[in-house]
Picture 1 (cartoon, rainbow, N blue to C red):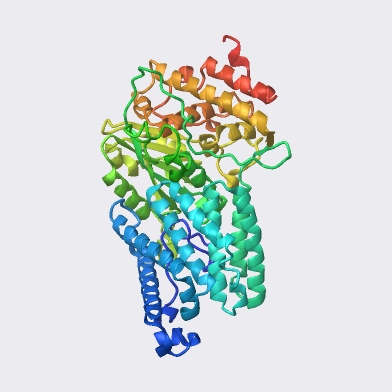
Picture 2 (tube, rainbow, N blue to C red):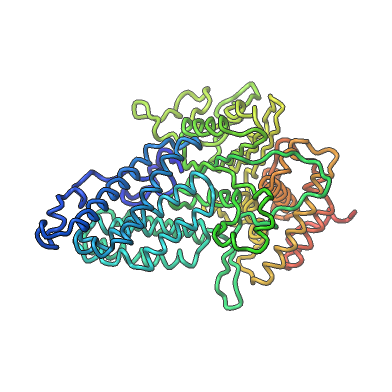
Length: 606
């Protein structure tokens, strides 16, 4: 993930890991164990001349592999963060060296223990680096199976207590390694929805931080406590709990499953475009985040991924051999995660995605950002006259004053205006804007005739609904988990698992009917249908229609600005205000016993 300039009101520990982006920069170089002479490293095992040649070679080979692995790992930070080809060979070499190092220390553990003095925390460091490699490979490829590999290594460190002896050594830098390991492990567990493990890890991390700050009287206690506060807020961001009969919380996943997206009717003609690349941008002030991943970014990231698959277990599944000649399922779209990027960073990654977009493919841009409104009067109605969404500006200072304080007759520099996206409409573009000024993107002009759709959030929500903006946007929640969003606007905060599953099944029926409404419409803009062949985009479109229809029927949503919009506009009478869909929403509300909060007047003529 790429991070922009950091907001001053959001402090971050210098020791807390930068987990969702580049490999962190190593600390100032100090003499490592592998730089000692062979005689020094073997001093505890007797005189150097008494050491068998084979054991001497074992230690030498280990030191070489350890140094080589560190060199390659530290070089990862110098790789370009954009582009999908340049980094692969380097990652491959790094994986190869770490694989050899890991097997080598397993095969020669006794010699390394006796002659090198290998400690368990050093083995943990190797395993942690391998976990980081798999995690960063996931970030580069968006393939969720690599998250499972990262989890395996991180979990092994914990189960085998590799870091257990660190606290007995009077070296605070080793304890920091342990704390960073915990933070990294928490991120991977969050992405895999292993919330029970997350809660255990948070408790252990809290104890470790307390011990660390007590023993070493460090100055970074506030910053490490901030890490704890962030992850605690993150795991509590969902507004609704699903409960088992014993009141334990059910962990729900919102990644795409095989039955997730509504199937296309046989013979239905839709576009064959495929979602290949996505930019997920988060720049909302004060929204809950952890590891530079806001709640909105996290939810949209999961909406654009399939459920993780254990590749090894899939090989032995019945029927795999018979279908070996059939094409395998399509991969997840590649994603860039941009947290508070500057305009130049955003544009650089956008241009890279545009350049590498394959033929017949779609680029998705998701913007979760604070709205920027036009200042002063404007005589025109061009693509730079309606404002847009905020980009980071903290790095752009002139004479101590922020640039955005300049002449109000000028356009805001630190803003992504609709016009800024015009050059990229030369290829199929799917835009989602979740912002208080999302309507700025309603005034798009399709200059090049390529498929173009913008899904736009409400610009304001009813006061009757408790302000939950810090815990994530309601609009993005509808796109990620429509049932949870429906429960939230219905005033429900918890639900039994059985009823949840019943409602999910009914919601799948609603999605199938919405898909038919869209494909059967005679007046719908063809851009929607050109994107409809892709599973991810089809699911986002049907959830958007469900969101819009729900809000239009809800008694608390009375103003136009409370409703989502789109470019091009959807035919309301055939989609978001369709009587058949409205009947379904009322039936769902009846199942939940909340029908009284929805209007039924529109049903009179049904």
